Image (cartoon, rainbow, N blue to C red; front, top):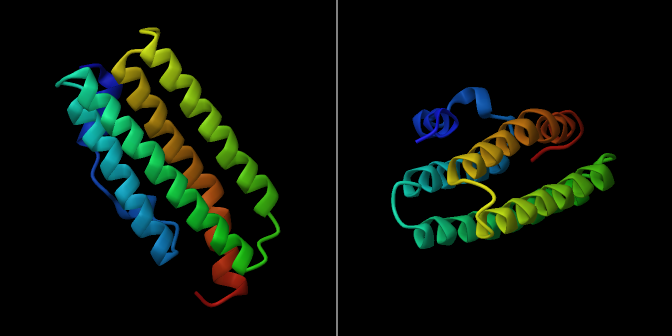
Length: 139
């Protein structure tokens, strides 16, 4: 296992990942759990790894749609930019998936990408959304 994957595998949900919005934090816990499950499956068959990748992508679709509904409900001024970031993440995911299928990307590299996606998007973009909701609306 690569050192990148070891880092993800050892991570448990921690309050440092919280953005302060109950629903978003709950969904992020599930998302991080799926990344950890994916890292664990790296040791098993490629078909299991692929199934977990597909599950994670489907969950991300749900989660992003959920976040976008929160943005619409509270008239979040960063909605268009945030939604475009979601779309860009899907494009990156799909590119990584194709590279993985074509044997041009290792499992550990895919897991590291997903972890970086989670950390960067959660700790920067989702925190902005949560701060806006907290200061402008009840949730």
